[in-house]
Image 1 (spheres, rainbow, N blue to C red):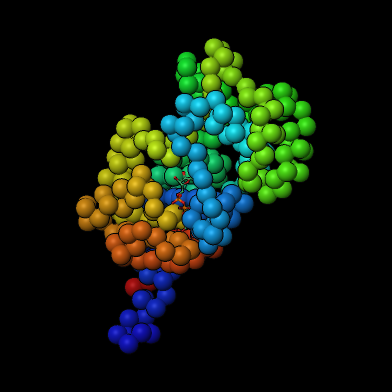
Image 2: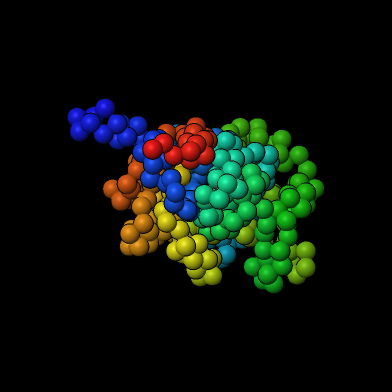
Length: 286
Ligand code: NAD
């Protein structure tokens, strides 16, 4: 009990369940939803200390050298990324949709783990790493197929690069990158780009509209594992606030706009979301 005698406010999970009970809600997910699957975030407790130099979309399109550096490292990243499995947070979100409580997901993630967990209505705001497109002709190729071509044309690359960058995330020496053989589009030999939104690029309007339409049919918004530092996600919190529907947050550590949240749990999504799904499945106590 707190001094006001309101038992609900002392247990953040109970307060969260109370807020969402009986409301059809939409969930906005970020990188924090996938850290428990072994995919690092950008601004979490572990990663905030590390310097980051994300690829800029304009540089990628303009520069052969930037693309070579990207693909030389991406071969390593994909080897780890493509083996990731959904964690209990993804599974709980799929369950909440099956049980008719969750209308759908808006995700900033590009890892496909929501769909792998069984979520059906998923708006991928920033695209997916599972496909690449040709910047010249627009042809689409599966990333897994490109990986085979990259490895066939750069024999031993995984082993060599792992020796240089054991955490799969360090900068590779320029001399190593210079000998990496980038693979072009199979149809027109144009340059390939992962089908994701890089920094400095905009989310395509139809995707934003689809996400707004999903949110506009909801009675609450739950944010999971996002610092909300990126505007393309934060705008949905602003929209929910303008519409006057309640907003809730499950995140480790601080997030932008948390003062707009009526309920907030500072904890691991993989622990909180299964508990939330259980709580919402229980009959309401009178
Ligand atoms: P972010 O890195 O800015 O924020 C992640 C937040 O999640 C942090 O506040 C962190 O403390 C929290 N967090 C970490 N582990 C958690 C856990 N187990 N449970 C609950 N919270 C946890 O992520 P963002 O807001 O999504 O913005 C990053 C951008 O980078 C996005 O645009 C996204 O497209 C991209 N990105 C995607 C992936 C992915 O697809 N998995 C990974 C990294 C970055």
